Length: 312
Image (cartoon, rainbow, N blue to C red; front, side, top):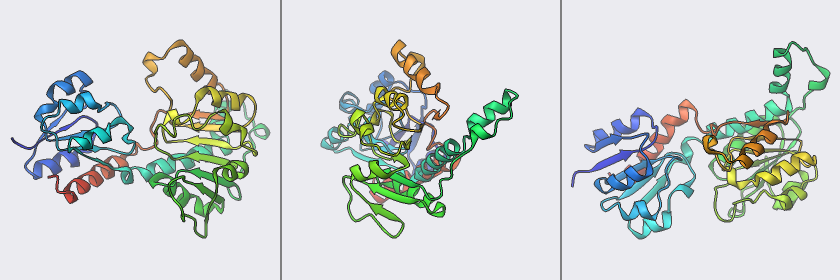
């Protein structure tokens, strides 16, 4: 069988060129839907995906010749990795490719919220020159808590160094991660002392709704909450409650529990309306890792991993 790869997501042209140079037959189907993928997946040796499609057991059972799956970015929850590996299908991700973009976005959310940049700009657009009510805060000297210390969490910590902030880090599965500028702490200590809490964890059964009423009740300093990981890490109702009760001073949210706005239920529409009514809440459309540079780097990282693993 000829080696064929199906690219189902927007990828840098480098990736298709890379496979072509390896004498693979490349098909790019950025808009392919689940049912069609299931119908044709048996014709391919390799599969490239992003966030749009769920690669579940039904897809995998139809993938008679599939040898590997490449994920552009992080977040392997879209792939049934355990089942894939049981069928000798190797799975690869490329979080190293967009971790800088995500970290910069997280830092940007903090600075925009602290300095009331969007809110004050809206005043000016409405013809009001309002200064005192828009007096900002400096990140310098604050305490930033990072939950999850993988590629994005560590990149965010690195970006914080010039601000001379105190950086607290909690990662349930990593120890010995502290250094001169970073202090490893228990989750309770992080939540008690942080002025900013930033989430950098994968979505798993364990992290689903880890940010809930109990989480917010452990906060002591009314921090900013930043989420550039996955929407379902936060219980949206609990987030709205924390904003209403003043348990947090604001939130920068790049991800939602459901990101298909066109098919929102009435309850989900009301949640989003309430969330965006707060001046000190910013919601962006899952773009933290979507820099132009990351588009290339994710493709490059994935290509290198596939080559190193002997998949090509």
